[in-house]
Length: 485
Image (cartoon, one colour):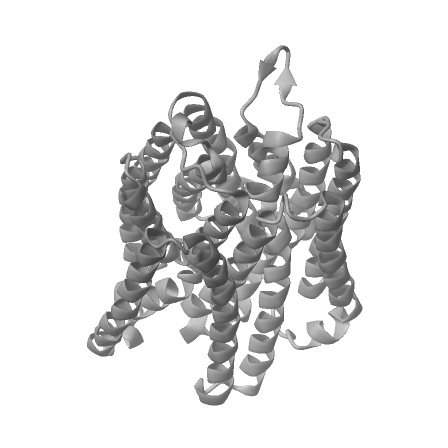
């Protein structure tokens, strides 16, 4: 589908998300490597379980705060303003990381978490509002939008990874901050093309005062969590407590999600049709959590694999380990138009797979990628290094799985959500990603504790099994979404 057939506002959001993802993935590409790097090289000198827990907490909380970020946009700011202020906070956080102090590093992580939680769900919501008619055209629009995400994810690790690994870690973090500022500049110049998409709804304006009071109560809890995080770092039991805290956060995410869906069913004044669609969103939440628990190991276990067990010498030069994280977005850029056109082509012939079927396909492809990693790991048991083609093959399979699941999932949430809860429902999608990211960090921390064939094989078993279940029950799940294009 051609760009000219889409709203002009889509390209503004394309570049906004591109620069935000440049910032996020550029920083994420070097995060665990910086955490385990020796103090003499400017790193923090932490062990892998601790680095994995920090990675999991950071990436998990980034997506967890998408729920309150969606709420703030729905009730107080509107999506347009939420995206802008979120971007400013992200840039501030990235520059805070660049300050050569341990305490400010963790404060910078917290700032980025808050900013991303405010920006991430709301930029996707605006994309959905640009297509009020829904249908395959909206799916194609999300696929184009997803190309912007992955263009930033491609370039970010290349630039920030080179600067961080080869010159100075803090310089890599600074580059991520400047990228976010560039995204904000073009956003302000082009937001006129959104029309009314992303504006605060009239029904929310009447209750804005009460919403602000609730927000300040929530800020009190946030400050308490920040103080607890800093306290954990300053105590001698930091490593043990941090891993326990990461596990607790996983339980908390599951609990919050369950309570939110229960609240909607009991007190959300949903119609019977809305309840059916909300139940489907809950199932997609579970599928997304399982998918991201494997996929997001790109920044943990597979980053360690690239650093320590992959032969990265190309033409006599050793490339940074973080560069291999650009393989996935490169495949996305090449394959996203193919998948977008494929869905439209199948839709025109009434053969397009249903939403749950696409989730099943995505999970099966992810699981097959980890089978490849399990096979590769058998050749490294004696400390031998393997070809980067193992990782490249894995990223190819995972990319195909991602394209079957992720952009379709984003679009499905905007279509299935009750209109008055769309921002918060988008937040639940990112809560699934939060849980998955947290699990990915904890699994990655076991890189040296478990035999790698066992580690990667276990992930393949769980994700592939979930994919089979989605395919098995795709027809009854599809019946709950009747009336959705």
